[in-house]
Amino acid sequence: MLDPSARAEFDRHYRVVLMIYGGLLASILVYPAIGYLIGKNLSSSGNAGTYERISGICYILAAVIIVIIFCVGKWLIPSSAGFVAGPAEISGLISKYRTGNILVFVLSELISLLGLVLCLLGGAFSHLIRFTLASLALMAILYPKRIE
Image: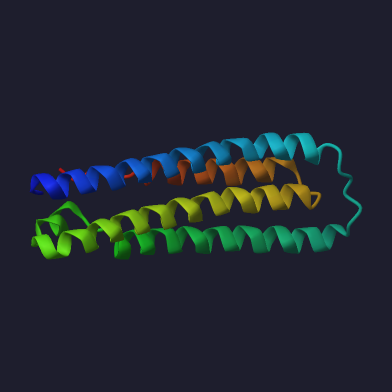
């Protein structure tokens, strides 16, 4: 539905989005290695009750971030039907597409980063694995769609 110049512009932005997606996906995969290497050298000297509260806060924060991700995806990432707009609106739609996708990917990575923080605060490595799997699942679900 895009004219050739708009198609070329969209393809350029799509490649940028894919590169950022790949970089953030790689960083999500690195967090468990960091948690394993650094976390095994840390000793948990804190209060168990405090850690449980921090752990609960991180899980609640992760759930809130997931809701925010889907809201941002709904509001900022235009559907393919939106790209039927006139030529004056195409650049704005492409910008929203790029911005929305990048924001969603960064928020998905933030969940894994929360798991890393929790692990480094003396928590179990299994928390980091759970948060990382949630991030990877979100990244798989939210893979950027190409507009035809």
